[in-house]
Image: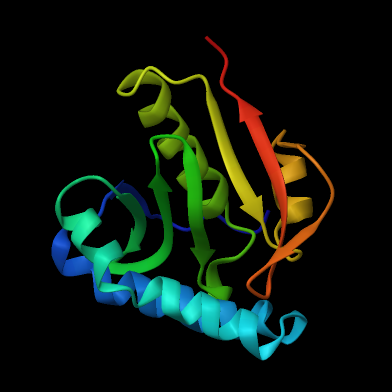
Length: 160
């Protein structure tokens, strides 16, 4: 991990949606899109631009936390079905500063303390597998592909 950068992790509000999804799209294109087919890239874009997903966020059924540096979103994590990380992205200039780890810890604390769940899951992209392994996630099966999206299903057991 490089030099510490002061950042704040908190739940995102409705006004943060576009900025957070823009960060997800830009980071996906920079680090992951090359490994995907056109179908996979389109599937990802369709997911992050889906108006139903945004409605779920506004209704509180799809949680998002973000990491902020001087008011700007530099990382984001989302949760669906109370225990599944569906998006985790950190701006490339902020990789290796503990932001991804802090986002997962904050969301895991919320899942355990507020939702009373003791497990979180993720479908890790090829780029993210080693990161999740370093945090203690374990594979639930081999790498898979669905709608052009490549992922390894993983879980992390939250300590009680």
